[in-house]
Amino acid sequence: MSLLQLKDVSMEYGGRVFALQHINLTVEGGDWLAVMGPSGSGKTTLMNVIGCMDKATSGSVILDGIELTQVSPKELTRLRRDKIGMVFQQFHLIPYLTAVENIMVAQYYHSMPDRQEAMGALARVGLEDRADHLPSQLSGGEQQRVCIARALINYPVLILADEPTGNLDEANEKLVMKIFHELNDEGHTIITVTHSQEVGAEAKRAVVIEHGHMMGEGGVQL
Image (cartoon, rainbow, N blue to C red; front, top):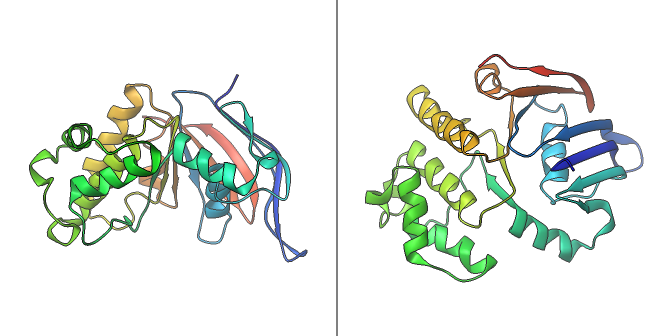
């Protein structure tokens, strides 16, 4: 069974506006998919549907064998917590907590905080020596690497990254993408949502969304 399947998925707002129309998509375990398109194309809506933040108006969304359109909002929250690791453009780190404490918060909402395990996640992204620094004491690239460590800490089945390099300079973009390559090589399944051709080209596959429609799909030369 595929890890993720979207079948004829549409998202309608206000009875008139379609943010997504008849989307069909399959993602296998260990895949790396880039969802590409301009601002306002429907990328974020698709991310929200896949990420258990919104329910599709119609169609079928199956994640790890679970039909997301049939579960309660409370169950969607649990699924997002247990199965998805989120990496955001804006980082969303708690400003008064250190890097390691930000990761331990994610552990707290999943099961139980474990500082040693959180430190291991930071070491995985090369930030063990920055564990006790506040977000304000970290560069943008370092903050994003903390976000990646936070996304990994609860062993998700899917890493979902929304414009993960949007606030980074070129050097930090390359560093973050190197981490994604390493994670994918280890078998992690990744979906990156981006308008950047350069970031999209790092993935194994890419789909293009325009005006809520999927316009095309193909392999990406690595």
